[in-house]
Image (cartoon, rainbow, N blue to C red; front, top):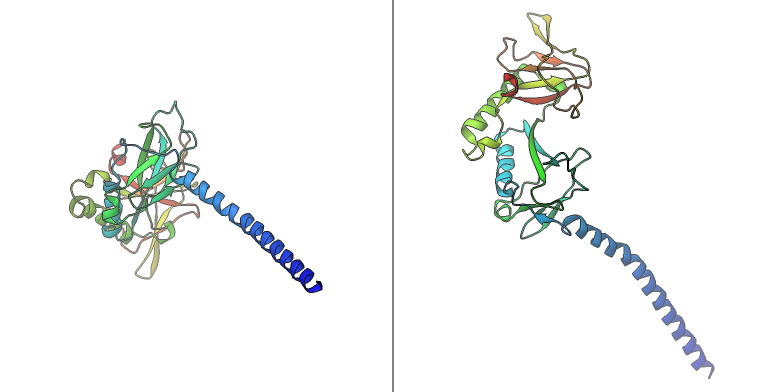
Length: 264
């Protein structure tokens, strides 16, 4: 009888342990399930494909070609904005939807984002999807330099100009060339217009100041606000390849488009 009572007590303890373990497992699994629901919401729920956007396969090809022919000098990002400024976007979400997977795109506070380069076969079925009404979005691309200001010299300026020209006129397929801007120069902007080129010649340190262009505008300036002063190098200057840029610590480089140099 004592043995039977002992066995019953052990069985009760085992059941209680199993019940507690099951409760702990359920408590552990709950956050995971919540995370999956949140992930699904971020990627697909409420998102619809917008046929007004450029086909993703075309953008994917441009980004892939840029990586191939750009010699590491360029990168491209995109900016999301409302097509009608009177109707601002409400908590916009983006995703790239393919037959194989869904990739969430997270714009930053300014609406900027980068797009993934997909395998060619997957890109054929890829489309951008959004939670905004169809036709309400405007997406613009911007070409950036990967060269930091403290690494710029005239040899790099001339290389940037040559690669950009060759990419646009020779290497890119004709149907992608309109997506790649015509580069007019390398622009440097900073809070103070203190820029100069410095090089050594015959044992002497030489330098020449650069002048700010009053007609140019800092591309990183917030809309409606005056930006930092800027100067532009086109590569056609007579200074030697070894002439390097000396600029304030906050100097930033950008691509100046050819049409910008014509005043637009």
